[in-house]
Amino acid sequence: MVLSLEVVEHIYAPRHYARTIFDLLSGGGLAILSTPYHGYWKNLALALSGRMDEHFTALWDHGHIKFWSVRTLGELLREAGFIDVRFERVGRVPALAKAMIAVATKP
Image (tube, rainbow, N blue to C red; front, side, top):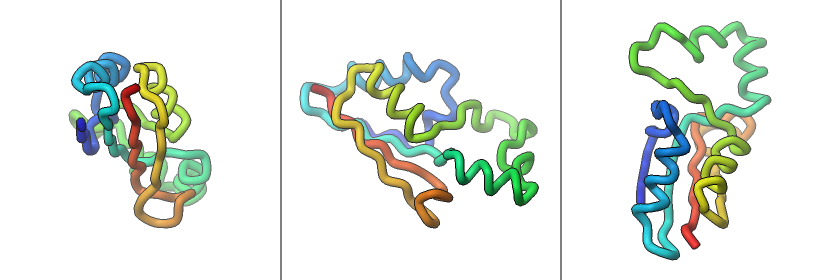
């Protein structure tokens, strides 16, 4: 198992990162990743509340450089070769979740 919590959003080359995780695992191994959740309804709520700049601040040195949704993180993991990619959203109601957890299997 590889456990990576709140890392992928800081990675400049996420395809290399995902492939490295894949290569570290034996067949049947699990990758568990967490990252802040970014989906349509959450981003819309941020925009309507006037908190978009605060949330996506460009002034955070060494902060988040990628913002992931279920679709984009799932695509990254499947592209790296993972199968059975599942997600859970955590914190608040699912549409406004704080984070998401991806669990993916190496065939």
